[in-house]
Amino acid sequence: MSDKLPNPFQQIDANLASQSHTGARRTGLVRLLFGGAGTLVVAAVLWFLAREGYQPNPIALMMAAIPGAYALLGVMEAITGIPYGQLARRWDNLKGWQRGIYGTGIVLVAMVFIFLIMVGVVVPLLHPS
Image (cartoon, rainbow, N blue to C red; front, side):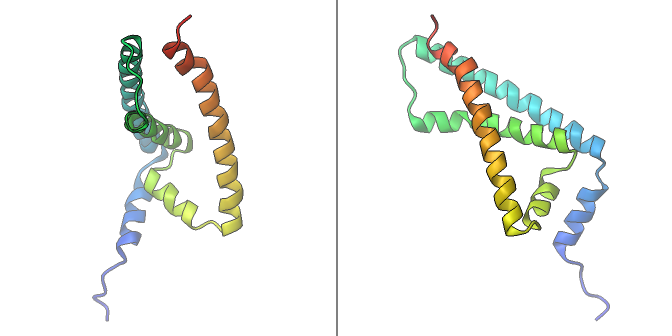
């Protein structure tokens, strides 16, 4: 049957591959800026609330992490120059042991980064001396 429709994922991959690395990096930087601005707004609100005696519950803190996650998505796109969807497909095509090693490395780097941000930024804001 010659009228067979192409696989939708093939079309998506073709569209993503046509986007240049510069375009993906620009999109990543825009996401980083908006996510970073949102993170700063959330941090300012939490700082103000902490000064007023409010201790945020875990649900509020999880909601506050959303702009930060968006910013990290932007960092990933800006560094790699690859749109998130295409990068996710590349990740899925790795062998299991490769995902295990890369995933463990990414988690360790993220833990160090989060620890440094908590000690250097969040704790001094919540508990000023």
